[in-house]
Amino acid sequence: MTPDAANILSSLREEFYDLFQTAMKVPVKLSKGKSLIFNPSMAPVASWVDKHNRINCLAIYAHTAPDALIPHRPLVLRITVNQWPNTANQASKNSKDPQFNRDWSWELSLLPEQIMDFAPWLASWIESESRSTELMKRAPHALEFFPHPTLQTANVAWTQDALTRTAAGEAAIAADETVAA
Image (cartoon, rainbow, N blue to C red; front, side):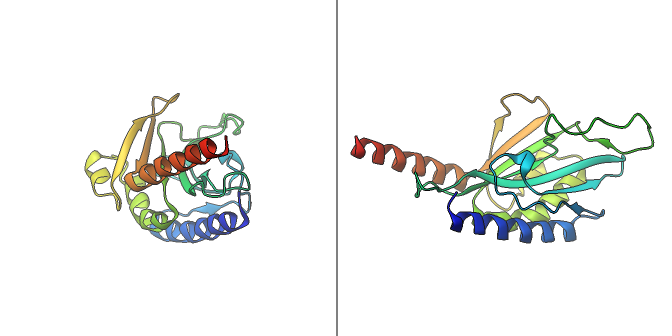
């Protein structure tokens, strides 16, 4: 990831978490990590306990980013909710302790200029618990939905603009590879 893309990600993540914390109706804790790695299990995380005493988490990381080899690759961000790494601590045996929410998960791929629009909307959507398609239709940017490759309880969405820019970026990369050959 280029230094400029890393700075953009770090700044947007911090600002998003501030907006998200304000919009949520329950206390939200933030991890202190500064990782910019593509691996979501290494990214700083926002977490909260819902009214069902379940621990939930939200992470933001770069799905794609420009780097030294492909400097014109688009920066596309990904927000994940409740996508726990397999290495997450096992739930407590004490039923009074909060348990990890593994009932549903969600991921959204979007452009950097779109992320702030999603903070209050995402908080409302999470808190609604119905996660209805009606609320999805009121997303701040048009969404396209896809099945998750491995999780039945996961929803995957891309903003239409992120899909378009990613396709355009892939076409430019392919054109550069053809010219270089």
